[in-house]
Every structure is written in structure tokens, then in C-alpha cells.
Amino acid sequence: MFVLPDDLPIELTPFAFVIGNWRGSGVVSYGESGESEFLQSIKFSPVAHGKLHYESFVTDLAGKAVSSEQGYWMLSRPQNQSDAGPGLLPGKGEGSITVREDLELWRNESGGFDIEALIIQPTGVAELYFGHINGARIDLATDAVLRSPNAKEYSSGKRMWGLVEGSLLWAWDMAALGNPIKSHASARLVRQDG
Image (cartoon, rainbow, N blue to C red; front, side):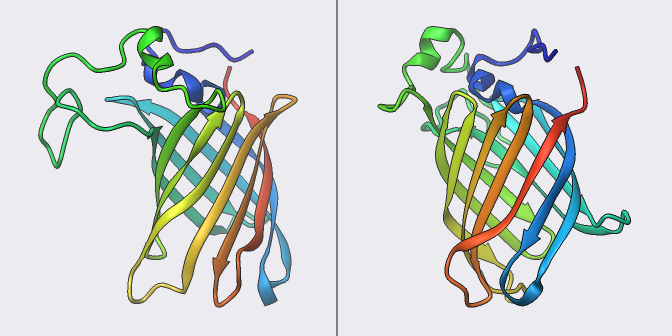
């Protein structure tokens, strides 16, 4: 059974269902590449200032590295003086979300919370996603994609995450390599820690 960490910032409680280590398998299929299975391990861990650190590692079935990505997920809200940054500047004063009532002020019209995620890949792609979290479901769509001049063409993505019968399921649609947005990959992951 999963237990919330006692020191989990109130601001991260909407993300509680993804926090921890996950492992499983999935399928990737896009364009002319055909279909192949992969293994994946993901870790979501709370870090300072109400941010959630995300790490993903993907291998083929033989264990050969295929891809990785990492980033930060958070509630979508204006930053204030209590938030750190830019750069190494520390925040000042008490955070703006310290009790449940503060968090509830950020609930959106659909009953969930607006969120954002910054995800980078070692292939020279960085994505800024906006979306929402409602219960045990997350929906994200790219607002911006930054590519190195040497990266392959990638223009947008949509990702959906959900907790179903204790497993974390996700699906990723993308527009890349001259193709319109379409299904790219999906996986089913099982929690690895208590």
C-alpha cells in the first residue's frame, strides 16, 4: 500500500498518486519505424519549492538503453517572492501554499488543477507542457518545443497519465518527422516501492 510522505508539500498533494518508483513495459510505433516493445523505469520525487522531479529510462527487451528524459512538474501558478529563482536566487518568506485551503484556491473549473511540466531529452529536445490533473489522471499538451539545430524534427506532443487498478498507464502522441500528431507510445507501469 502506498503511503504519502509526512513531509510532502501541500502543493504536491494533487500529484500524490504518481510519486515513487515505477517499472513496466510498453509499445512504441510511429511512422515507418514499425512496432517494438520496451521496458521503462520512472521515478517521481518531490524536491524543494513544490516541484516534482521526473526521471524516465527506457531500454529494449534485452536491456540496451533506448532513451531517457527528465524534468520538473508543478502546479501552474504565478511565481512570487517566496519561490526560488531565477538562477540561484533564493525565495524569501513563507510559501503561498502552506495549508489545504491555500491549495483549494488553485482548483480549476473542472475540479482539478492546472499544471505545467518541463521535460528534456538528451536528443536535443526540450518541451514545455501545460495541462491539468484531476483525481488520478493527468493530461498534458506542449505549449513550446525547443530543439537543437542538430535534433530530429519534433513539433508537438500530448501525454496522458492515469492510475488504473493500481498501475500507472500512460500514452504519448506526437507530431514529428513530418507527420501530424498521432500515437507514438504507451506503457503500463507497476509501483516498485511501498
